[in-house]
Amino acid sequence: MRGLYIHIPFCKSLCPYCHFYSIDDSNIELQIRYVDALINEMQSLENKYFDTIYIGGGTPSALNISVLEKLLYAVDSNISYGGYEFSIEANPESVSDDFVSLIKESQISRVSLGVQSLYDDVLKLLGRIHSSHQAIMAADKILNINKDLNMDIIYDIPYTDNKKSIKTLEKIIKINPSHISAYSYDAEDTGYLKGFNNDDTLFLEVEELCEKNGFYKYETSNFAKIGKESIHNSLYWQGEEYIGLGVSAHSMVYLEKNSRKRYNHGNDIESYIASPNNVENVEIISSSDALLEDIIFGLRLKKGVNIEKLEKKFGKINKNLLNKIEDNIEKGLLIREGVWLKTTERGSLGLEWVSCSLL
Ligand code: SF4
Image 1 (cartoon, protein in one colour):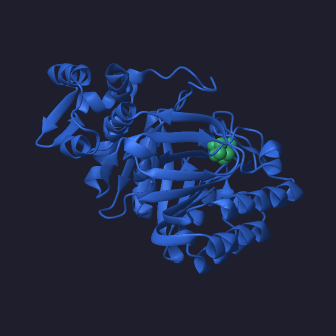
Image 2 (cartoon, protein in one colour; image 1 turned 90 degrees about the vertical axis):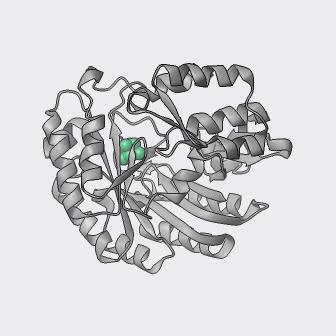
């Protein structure tokens, strides 16, 4: 399987905790030049077949509607889409009637809505510009056009009452999307709102509430109704190929003998527009490093990694790595069940630590 990611770097307002590459959306002329560069890059692709497509950002719904229409038309005309999953990200304040009509008529099958909280004071603290009412209305509009809906929330937010995150999740469950992404607040990159005591994390409570209501956990931050897991995002966790178009987008392609190449586009929109086919930070990943990456990313999945399948692909796991895995099993952080290696509950709470210990 291979996925296509298209990055839209524009946002209506820049949230202080955000670590993605994004810029103010008010310059329409810049949006037009950027989408033209994306189309240029798309047309230069050697292999134009993709099983999944994901338009992310930034805020794709913040694009001027005729610019977004042009981008979707270019995808239809240039990409050979396998029909597995076509997602677009949106934020509640820009889910306009025009946006909804365009999505309704398009090949897009899934909308991922950045809700974060259904409490206005928490949204304000996070620097979000939408209200809880706008988020509920936006979810309603998307459900009405029969597209799969993911709703993103954040919990463990410092200086807020944790109960508000649980209440937000309860309200979202009632709205009944097909997928919920729930992220523990992370101030590490930006330093904004530091100070949460990790011992108070809602990690297990969030999992319990979702599972009790039919949203089963399939990845450390992702919950879905059966059959509604994100196919595109699963490609990243399972070491499948992906191509990223646009400023700051990353790609990973297979090379011979199970080695891989990873590269990206750098974080400057004008440089990208000037040469959309220019890539930076090209990194060749050896077969043994690719195996290690597949184990580390695969441990994010609740089902874990299929060791037998990996050994068939990459050959026997080396002794050094096997010892590190055994060490984690002895500590009660990993467990082997048949061909599957996965985290225990304690391991999933300390996933970062487990991953580092395997390096
Ligand atoms: S809307 Fe999303 S991408 Fe844009 S600044 Fe806020 S968190 Fe970042």
